[in-house]
Image 1 (cartoon, rainbow, N blue to C red):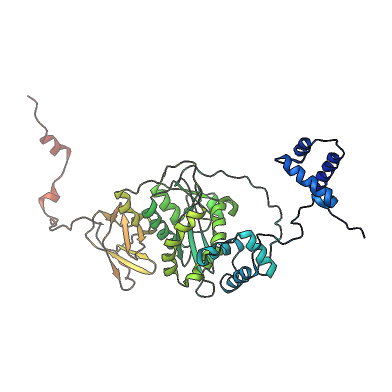
Image 2: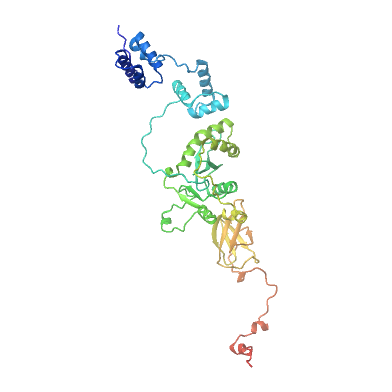
Length: 431
């Protein structure tokens, strides 16, 4: 009975070379060169096997046999049991890291992928369709030159806690997470607090790359013609000299978008393993998690310089004012100001002169304090318990000091007339 032997191309070539060697068409040295072997001794060994076994002599002896480096059944059963117990929804690469980190079991991610696929824990994904072609943008040269920033709403605590938003900034030069914080939303107050913490830690970046979310950019159609319409965040960054760049697509700021994809897989599982289910504990956990994450995934930037701008003492004192929610209001005839259904009565004595109908800036500071500013001075006021009755206070203006005495109408000072004749009487006489 004939046995069908399937040879690889390499094995078929070797068999033909050995045949030529038997027919004395080649020398052993020439055969060695044609087969790409290191020594003539290897040629003689193959020649001897072919002489004894025929065509089977060129077939690799390990074919059809279990690998000498295979894992034993006890080891694979232990790995699978640990995966099912603790890392059932982990991807193979991440699961291999955790097996070594927590259980001192060393196994490559590809070996674990095959093992998880074999038992049905992991299902290989289908090949992705070709994406729309986009132009690749080179990374910035220096750390601090550009920060990619965004927020992600996700079930970060799974079913253990409420859905919240992770605010994240990633340096464009080295792909490092520079700051991260869990908050309730991506509103202006949360974003202001995020960047104040960032400035305290790193300084001022040259630019921030973000999307067109309403916190960062006014998207109303009329804003096309009226470019002076800006958000609170745009106003604040303009005042401290940070350039805002808005992306037209998620792919444009792909580094922070891909970072969210990684964190939605890894960080969620790390929070689960740590038993964390609240924003406060999660923010404390990030202080330990981020350095470890950056050590593993950050790249080396082209240049070593850190070009964050230093926060000067003068700017530091102004930051609470700059990063406050500011609104413009008009002073009424009774020197009151209405703001968010509250009425503020200005006091008679002020640090600067204030007139009726003046435009003032009402600042809502992040600590809840409300300040009224005009001409870079904060006005003194009292909060009225109810809406005041309409009246016209005869005061012409609120001034620095209240006059202690007012001359009567018949006082000589009021009767003095600066006429031409009087003026001439005081002119010096030429000699």
